[in-house]
Length: 312
Image (cartoon, rainbow, N blue to C red):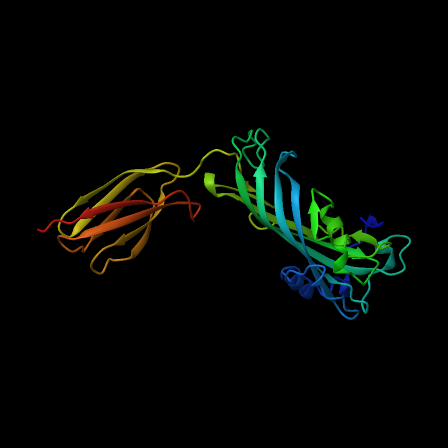
């Protein structure tokens, strides 16, 4: 890590915010992956935008309880925008030794997998010891507003590969700048935010770690929470059928019927383990596919009930 200082600066002010609307638009747009070899040099006029991608392995992941519950391997794509030399921030916002200061917005996205550590406290609301060795997909982002005394970021300074937690979130963006750059951060309550989702598809569990949108929810515990269907049955006549089944975990399902006639391919959502059909053709075979839903998402394995209507 290069020699630099980090201080708490003033509030985001005036046009130094990159013009708030433009800054927000820049923050929420992923600019694309650029390695050190691919990155373009920074422009010295108006708002500068640069990006760099890093493969991170063995990164410790902290849960709500404050412990390391998993290690992850992700591809991090970091983008910064700002540095408008025609509209600098007050030099004092970058520290007492700075003679120049510029407003920047940094955002990185992480995509990859996390391997939970057996016995560690789970990251979410249940806060129980993790059983087994669950693996979760990782998808999320972090954004930070900050000041930097340099308007000349260099993406080639950002490492292409990293092991462990080599830099803090704020420190990650500092890697774009040359040695000797000084930094300041905003005190605004809305200046920094993050949103991450960890999905253990095998156990049908999701942990959302976020201070944005819906906030924190769910957990990764290693316990199988997938719905299980059983006891599928159909009561039929020549033109009607009532299909029933049993399920753990959920009472919401998506059902699809396939067979001859106008009902073929018809899909519906039901809130109890039953589906009723009329207008079927006599003496024909139909299959109803039942997909359990949890919070509106497909969870667990689908089941099928096949039946044949009577001739009369």
